[in-house]
Length: 245
Ligand SMILES: NC(=O)c1ccc[n+]([C@@H]2O[C@H](COP(=O)([O-])OP(=O)(O)OC[C@H]3O[C@@H](n4cnc5c(N)ncnc54)[C@H](OP(=O)(O)O)[C@@H]3O)[C@@H](O)[C@H]2O)c1
Image (cartoon, rainbow, N blue to C red; front, side, top):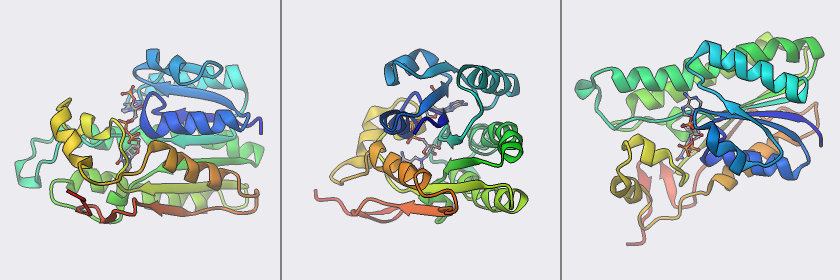
């Protein structure tokens, strides 16, 4: 379709799967992540560059280079994000909370606020946010991660109101369990604990979530998909998962 699609967190998981999906559509891609050396393996044709969404200078540098390489941005997919640990609130030290809020909320805002003005000026654009089922339902040990994802809902609502009449679409794609590097990051590299999250059940693949993003992006310009909540068939709530074992 020849859109310029910018994807944050494209070095892994859902972001990388979105890159594959939109590349197949014939779009021009700009991919960012801290582990930028991984990005060229995700796509041979995309513009790839280092991006740390928690670092304002890095965000500004990345977006300017993306626009220089591929022109004005048609679609921004905010996939960069993480959960860290499963501490109950009374057990938290604050370090992991700051990391999650700085990445999932403030980082996403920093990218989005720099992209929006040019979409409003051009009267075209689409912002996609990868939220989470965790933003709809809390669970023990996930309070701050859930809060960081819940925060995205009023942010999306406000952007829709603030850009009304400027032909900007805002979509939140909110998945349940997806097997990516998410749990390895959450458990700080402990593969055994990460594997246990998916043991005996059928989680979604990153490509299943990318399908949802692609479907929302490919609706006609007058149709805005507000929120997609998507879970595995084997999941009914964050901690209610059917396991065949
Ligand atoms: N997997 C699930 O079950 C699930 C469910 C619901 C929602 N989500 C959400 O989906 C999104 C993608 O997660 P995933 O499942 O694909 O996990 P993943 O495989 O760990 O991918 C996370 C991506 O975010 C990037 N990232 C993290 N911190 C960053 C930063 N400061 N600056 C730039 N990029 C950063 C990582 O790249 P670098 O480390 O290279 O920077 C990586 O590319 C997240 O927002 C997550 O909260 C995941």
